Length: 156
Image 1 (cartoon, rainbow, N blue to C red):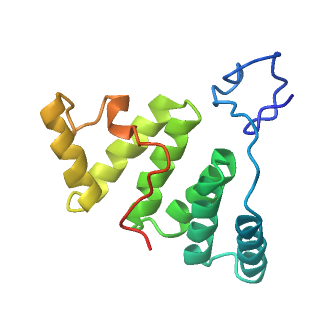
Image 2: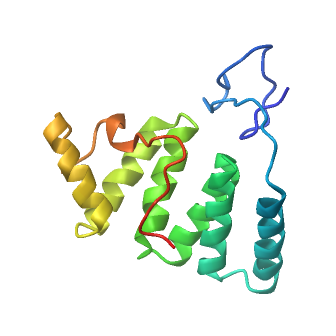
Image 3: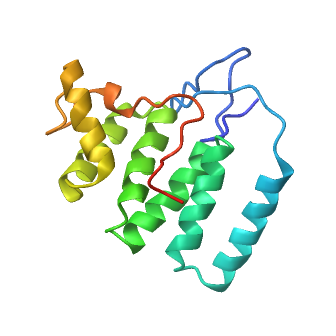
């Protein structure tokens, strides 16, 4: 079996990739409607690679499929092409957290808080400060925990 993120060979029964730390999930049946969306978004991007809205929507689709590596690739490009896209920065941090790269996730979350101090997600992170987490300069992976199936409500 191969890691879905870095393609490293996985030992039998591995729950995490020894190479990149990504969580190795059991395969689930994939919703064909999501696969159709991916095809549509990729077609649009082949015509206009700088279409950040389409690229962001593609990354959201990959997130729904828990294909974190693909989501990261597209979110990185969205953040490069449109640095003032707060939801892309936030979800990029979440995606890195989900593949086990906590340090990178914390760096991105710090950048998110710094760039977008008035974003609703920043206010939510600051409320978590009451739980003993410093959000002025995030250092705790607690900030990145999301309930399974939770979606960023600020994105439609």
